[in-house]
Length: 382
Image: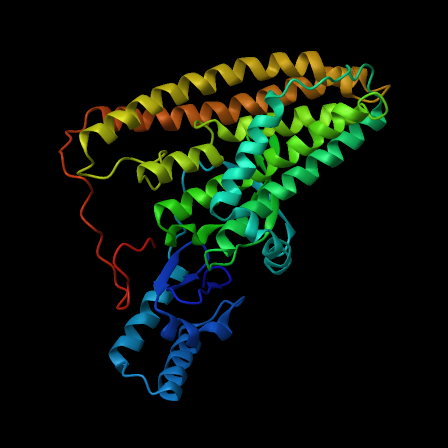
């Protein structure tokens, strides 16, 4: 069968069963019967036995036909091909922190992701950089300074991912583990928040933005420290620049990062990098076409600007004696970047061609897709 199961529980709402790339939404009662299959690759007979035992133990009125139909649905989802996309953003995913540890670390941060607290932190992260603070130039930076700045930056990046996890956990669903992956040729951290599809628009935006808000607030704290100790600790100023650069990068709505997903959720799109559903309203289709064109232009600019930046700065950062290697490292990174950028641009152009010739209607949404799940909830994403 497919990958290991992950069962996302909720204290009051429906549960989500992730069967290795596909998701099934179920009410609490029948989903609870399958809890013992968490982390396993169950066979069809095991699924049916769990459903029968739970149905009998709790005396619920589910018929044998319903149990068999659910078993068939779960089995088909586990064995079927996992949906893929040529625009998938991350590759070479390596797990770093398990879901259990992420939940333990995120729980104390839940209060920071609620309502006006999150708004206050956002204002803090935005206002402090605008204050007329006096800072000395960091001047010459040693390799030790670069290392210290990188450590502080990674702390902020971890806080960013825990912010996503805390915002999701505060709304009842557990987040998954934290790992590292490659975005084009740039290493980035990521957190599994697949249960976000169960939330309302406001809840989704809260999860999308919480990471950037907490990282920006952390950057503001570093900025205040850098103001007082820049001469004694020049790495603080570098850490501030790196932290705010990461926040600004995440805000860009053309890469599949937080700003991109916040835009999708705010407008009600499941994914801007997919063909628009039949029946999409004309304003939304026009917006997607404009976004596609701007995205292609942005990616083309990045493919030109990043190599220029690498050529000017990477040589200065490399340790002594590594100078000759820059003639190999930089061209290699450029070729990888152009390969991934070219693939993404090709994908976007294909979508643009398909959607540009589509006749639009004024209906607000496409007709819902039929599902074999006997307990599927209206509006649920699977």
